[in-house]
Length: 180
Image 1 (cartoon, rainbow, N blue to C red):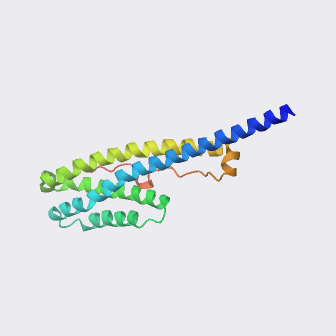
Image 2 (cartoon, one colour):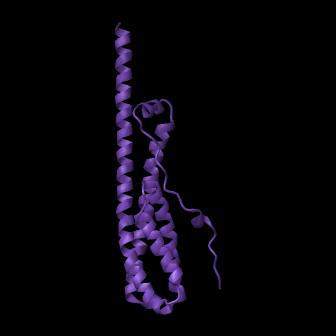
Image 3 (cartoon, rainbow, N blue to C red):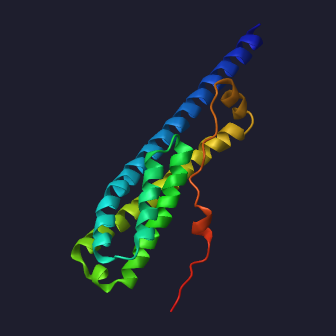
């Protein structure tokens, strides 16, 4: 009888510890996503100023600017976190095209307003990259725990599920084309 009570107590303690571990990981994922979201919002808010500044110097680059605005709108209208993460990846690619425009337009490159916005955007992009790394690290921990035995039993019992990693889009994996 004592052995049965000890076994039941060990199982209960294991369930409690496992559940609390999942709660901690889930909260870490939520916190990491929220941190990344703050930086993404900051970049999101910089984009209209950047587009307006670039518009004043580049009369023939409407396609590039339209791609940035469209990507920004896609993020704004995202229905869930996965769509938002995909939209943010596309937005990153569109912003890189604006960086490239500066090379083709010396007046734009010399603009103090543009340079200030670019510095802010560069810093924000670095913050986003760091936040993505942190987010992916905590999501990896949660996903590993959701898939590992015996913690996957607790995950299934209490409906803890895997989260998506923040991944680079296919365009970002392509080789950069440099023309001289």
